[in-house]
Amino acid sequence: MTVKTYTIGELAQEFDTTTRTIRFYEDQGLISPKREGQKRIYSAGDRITIKLILRGKRLGFSLAESKELIELYSHGSNNQDQYLKVLEKVNISRERLLQQQADIDMMLIELDEHEARVKADMKSKNKNKS
Amino acid sequence: MTVKTYTIGELAQEFDTTTRTIRFYEDQGLISPKREGQKRIYSAGDRITIKLILRGKRLGFSLAESKELIELYSHGSNNQDQYLKVLEKVNISRERLLQQQADIDMMLIELDEHEARVKADMKSKNKNKS
DNA sequence: GCCATAGTTTACGTTAACGTAAAGGTAATG
DNA sequence: CATTACCTTTACGTTAACGTAAACTATGGC
Image (cartoon, rainbow over all chains, first blue to last red; front, side):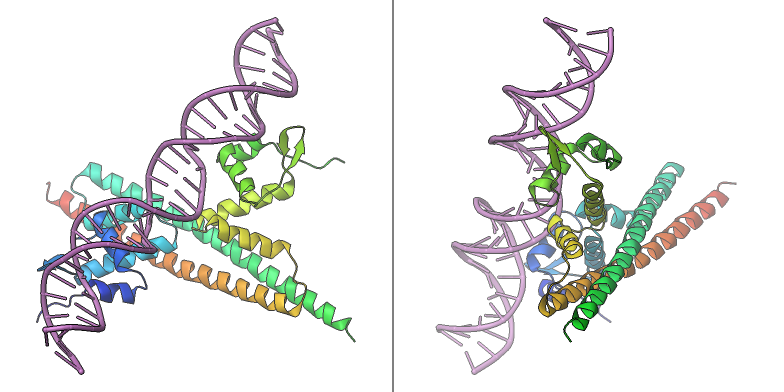
């Protein structure tokens, strides 16, 4: 069975982005699609990489940061030294994400509070209309 | 009792940012500190606003987005029309945050998985050293 | 009186992450 | 066979969010 591949247009549509953006990620060394003549052919792996990049983007990760993470996942650590560095990077990423979780939790609470305030306000105004 | 105030340097230190950044936020209309002669004097409210901006920044919010949220909180809705818009904005923000929560959850799982993989790898290598 | 420290304004510089336009190749379709 | 739909490369443009430098003011300590 031949492996599933994608054109740049398909991926741009699927992820609601532009072909320019996808080519830019290639420029920055994040993906390296095969070629079929001139045309870029994206593998399932390329597709996943793009997905990771865009997810990182939603969390405010720069391309450089996403690249680091992706490379972290693809390169197994060879020696003890590399191994420790990998674990350290994992921990740094984790702490950042935990901080973001805390930030989100607070923002969600504040949104709820504000919504309740505004709704209560509206009710008391409607009373005075009688 | 006189109300607690802050200098720009104090706030920059507290939030681990620069005075340039704080002045920039003023430029963009996010804060409007009082003046004492030439010097900017920040109130407790100004300080909170800066805190909100920086929290938003950690989550990838642009200054314009943080500004919208902050204004959302400070302007109570006057009429029915405004009221509905406020609720809509609250919902949009909430959904974004929920998406980010989901993204973070997945990334944390992947980090754990990778860490486990790398650790297992290291163990099997150490076995072969005997 | 001088120096260090912290504040001020003005203004040009920088980086990331694409947008946009121009000019062209290729393949299916009416 | 001409049009339409995608693809390509090249290259200049744009925006956000500050950085950095220069030149000046105010203040407390020695």
